[in-house]
Length: 286
Image (cartoon, rainbow, N blue to C red; front, top):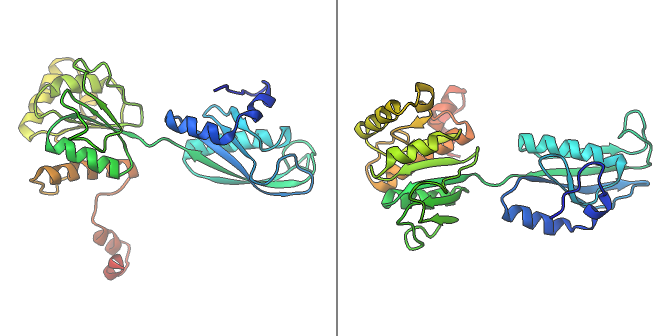
């Protein structure tokens, strides 16, 4: 795939089919934005349904939604959408040098800009029924599930997007900045895997363990030189207090905590939240 950066040969990027680019970028789990012309009026170079693909640096990778009159505005909107995760509709006046897109080109058009962000990964280190349930629930909740364990196989983890069964030194443990990690090794090497994970800045690091085991692991890590700020990033024991007992319930409590942090929830019951806002409690059941 050839990138077309600002100032480079834009004609080549136009010849790259937008749908081919979209499929390629999605398969590589790379973020990008798609700009689609949804309405035109007057003299414009792009046609309705014309598309362009823009990367996280604002480069036009392929497709076509207009030349210099519109390209700058679309690139800027794409960067804004990628930063916020929200879509946008641009009303471009291509015939107004002062209030429009910078030079009089003639006509107007509307462009829909949509960010396409890869689903975050859920890394599961460990095996057993809790890990199996975490894998299934994570997949159902839209995570790209990676199971990193010597015993990982398709029989026990059919919903996993990726299995890593030969990573004894955790060299293949490579979560991204937006990924979540749950360690469910059942005490087998949990202190070692936590050391590897703590070297990365992640939104969630959970340790499935008893309170006693969690305390012992954190004490070990402190002796290994990890400070309070680093250890505070570890959710140990992982999960919300649901009174969970079975492996399925424990996995549910962990995934509930992950969703809570990912979506910025309060953790309060919906009934309580409705009551605090002065809404009839019965409305929560509608």
